Amino acid sequence: MDKYMTSMWNFVKKPQILYHIDGYYIFLFSSKEERTEVVQVGPYSYHNKPFILKPWVVDYVFDTESITTVPLWVNFPGLPVGFCSVAALRKVASSIGKPLYKDKYSVDMNRISYG
Image (cartoon, rainbow, N blue to C red; front, side, top):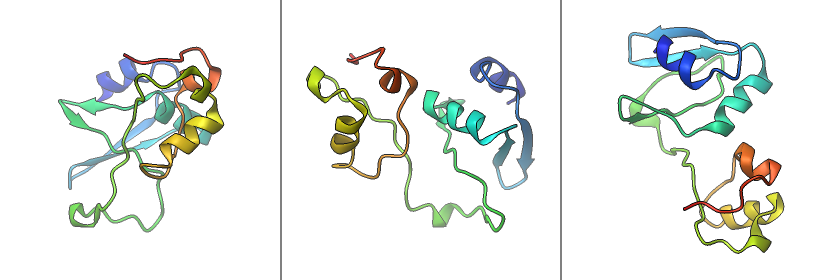
């Protein structure tokens, strides 16, 4: 995991990694901004298994039975250029769920299509 993070998240200060015997990791980032930046660059997978990155809460209990929602990274191929603003993307994305994050390319308007 350490090598993976060093290569994948080389744009932020390396977070502290805590491994729990129940099979999950906790990543302690230096700041909320770094955590948000890592999430925006995603999605991630490790050994062909998707990461589900969630903000830490004090009373968190890992229970696979209680996972009822899974965040998805969605591309909209063929979306007209007029729908590439952050506000328009939010409206389109809200038709399939609750939009959480925008990727860096969409925010900066550096990429207007995905193939």
